[in-house]
Length: 237
Ligand code: URA
Image 1: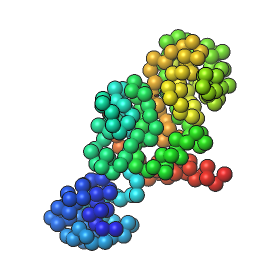
Image 2: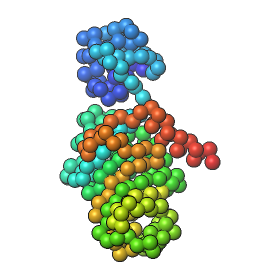
Image 3: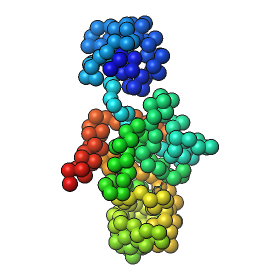
Image 4: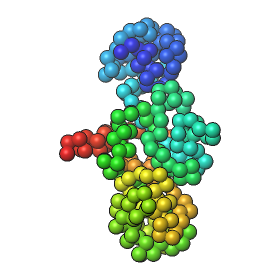
């Protein structure tokens, strides 16, 4: 692929900025400075910008610690999660994989891997999502059992959830589907109310403790592999 394309798809430059960086001698490929933006390099080449490695991959993946007050969308009248990540993410066609309510915080995957997102969000694949919650009233054993057995919610019956309590009004709930306002609706169905909700796990991804609300980081190669395995395991079945 062309060197300027490699750099712009890595997210660090636009195509024209990449051209300037290349011509000014900031880019080395396999140890040699290249000054021709149209030069073709293999995807496996070792590329540096100002001596720092630049890694190209077909898709980009970001873990965002979503704060309250942001909409999980690429466009909205209000603030969106895309306002929290570098502008290059929008240029690269990245979008939030799934949605958290405006007042829900925690782990949100932002990617431009359309086929991957389709699979991780598909109800067929039962990707688990774990949320820490607090609720308005103590959650009774009966209410927990109803959630663990599947709850009738009007337009659908939720699949069995797993619920672990830390205190009578807080704990963790894991669900394997992602219907609109699902957890709030499950608590409402047992005459309770969610007072805070934070996603701490999405499939194999665990919210990085080092990320404060509003902060993000790229997924590691290992995390990307684990995500891709979710899908591979399903297609092998
Ligand atoms: N369930 C909800 O009710 N809200 C969320 O944001 C996520 C799951």
